[in-house]
Length: 50
Image 1 (cartoon, rainbow, N blue to C red):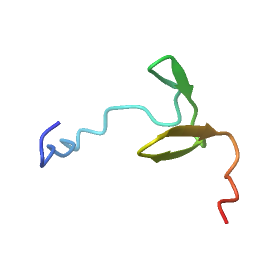
Image 2: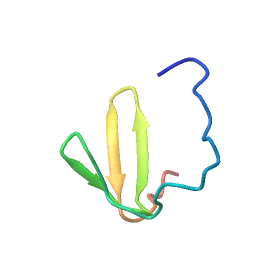
Image 3: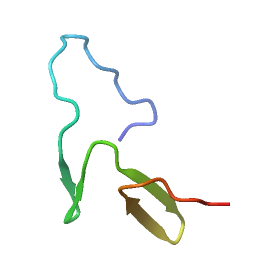
Image 4: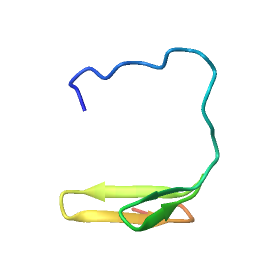
């Protein structure tokens, strides 16, 4: 990735609300991702972090 990534070209192509598999984990639309320098948590529901 570049320091200033190129923007979309505006052709209107692409998909939204799809499953994405990355690193053996499937991310679904609406999932909540929490990350820090020790790891990543993926949750179907928002976590109470207080």
